Image (tube, rainbow, N blue to C red; front, top):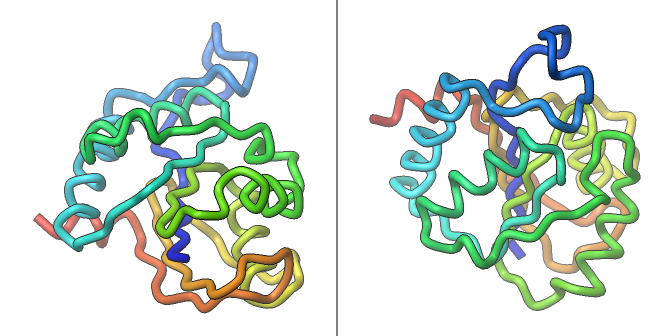
Length: 167
């Protein structure tokens, strides 16, 4: 399996009036535009996805929808409560085994520090190894057998500025 971890784009600030509920903060216009450019860069790199799993938080959903629309796979976007910032990566791995075991290439759209913890677990078996994702950052992992624990190889981690520079 090719597993891609992707952090959502730039969202409205937490302290902005009207957005006190963190889960309802949308992407900013700049954030949406940057994700669109990053999706174009993904496609130029030859990346393909069978499935997009997204956090149900609005900014992650919007990020996932932009990428899926660019690829024409809008019907392949699924929301997972196991991708909210406070969730356990172990629950996501269980969900993937139960519902998405046949997927060959999966894009996971989520948040920090969750994505760093998930990546750390897949690489070392320990969620405490520090691996940070910038907003719009993308990492690719190769996995023979997806388990909770050390099972993956990090193929690459690309910062959003690098992706945006692929014009």
